[in-house]
Image (cartoon, rainbow, N blue to C red):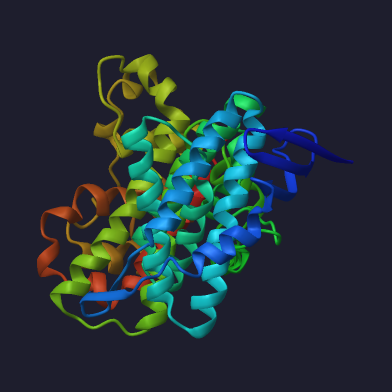
Length: 422
């Protein structure tokens, strides 16, 4: 049912869904249609595009537009004291119409750099206004639009940085009104957590990475000979409880980086840049495995080691014990877990030998007189790459020549760790 509110300089027409911010259908600002005012003003905001260096463009806003922004933002702040949820919706409405106009004007004519420059300028303008006035309005929308443009430009780092600024805005605005975790229904959160929601504007990008995960997941199931539903990865990890979803978002970011480079260069050049760049993703995956195991077993570890820091070796030992892959650990062993993470014979200490031996000749190794299950090999591989291989990386080109294989095994180690989550 449509509702109307007159407050400050606004006349607002809106619908009020349960548990969500109002959906605005029309806004009159000083008795004029706000969307028309924005369109007229935005079309004059670009005084000129100044190229300060190659491939970089700077947007300059018209003073009239800046003054209009400052005036309406002040009125939005005043509206917050009357209806906080409507203030959020008005801010979204304002930024959506600003962004969509330039979205259509610039993106459709092929200049993503200009779209990026415009959105950066908008985010800069509102951020500076907040700092100078000590006021705050909701500004998740421009950061979310900027996330998409960065993603289109192939700048994954900036895309995720912008997405998390949008998420932070949503968290500050939505949780106090609708309860803890309400921000998780926002578009930016759905993107970084790969929520399967076709209504999300970034769903194409989400679907690409979900398809990639599903491809690895199906191969993992064949190797370990049991099922790992994609829904478990969603619920337990990517949208998990506590800080698990944050680890999951870092996993999505690392997958995006890996996927970008594999698409650009299916055969990676063997040079110093790719060697060290690939090391970054490889050790990100190792870190993710480590942090999942820490989340799952930290409390159990502290029961026996109250004054010690937990390492990936401790998590793996508790995982093996939990899954009954090895004879049950006694109290003494639990107080010195990392001393017992040793195969027979010991695994090689160079990344190249580790790759060649652990997976090409797994029958050579046992662990506490048990044959190595695939899950054990994946986790031991992550452990050794994280703690041993890091000492002499620059001399080994295996991170280039076997990059896709190594990252696949490390993704499998993450899947194994996810299976420990409850």
